[in-house]
Length: 426
Image (cartoon, rainbow, N blue to C red):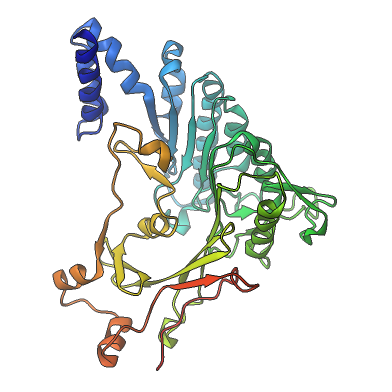
């Protein structure tokens, strides 16, 4: 009976943590009695979500006796407050973030039961803020992860470069490369990425892949690389020309080199399990919607030699669910800009209620609820917003039929070609 009551209490605590009150309500429960505290503490610490504002304080005050309860840590990073948009204020703000993240490194290494780590930028930062997460900060956190951690998401939102001080201070791909052989689930979205992430080559940064040797990833279940960053400063990692030059090139997009490297990883016997899901994602388009050519999310499944090309349309900048994505012949949905990524990547990582980011297989086993991606079917959205239209819908109304569809590309040398989807003309 006591065992059953304990299970019920743990389930109740999990539901409380998933509720609106969340952590504060759980803390109140811990004060009721010793038994409730013993049962509630593992629920409280199981999935830690830290933000820029509290990461330093948490690192300073965390009680190490609770380390055994921690299964995931999610860093939801935003820019520390700016006093102004002057360069000196921006540099000081970014330096403050770096200082706070350094304080977290020793704590990470002490979490011997940690299974999953996510560094995640949840929102778009205005360009004038020039927000950056220093590469050396990301590398420091990666190197601090305990051996128990077998799932990793690094999604900087493209804010992982030092655009003020003159470029990257270190090479994130090399640091991740050392970590990947033990990993189960990996999701990477950086402004700079290169094949060094998953292999080695005789001549560093030589992206003619004849001498490329993919790294063995015996434990991999899913690997997703998002190189959809459209910033003009994004690109493929390149060696510095001088001691102060950045690791980047404005002229090279990582897609060709990364798709070739991933294909070699899959094709090389013994490098990864045949059951592993190996995918790469980019967004292509040149703002030619007026000509019927739309921005398109390209998701290439390397194992099956299949690419899904999902056209997207910005229907309304004034609506939260203002982005339309066409999924197949009969379905379209509207979602947020962040929701587009989740839809394209088939929800490979999910957000638990409370903000924790974990791989989908892990999320589905948790009693803590999953935060649903906000979206609505196209037909329902249009019925609720009859006064809102866009050029695509106007053209389809004139034609009397749909003109824009998702595209499935299979096999052949062109299946990795990131060509945007165009409207039908006849």
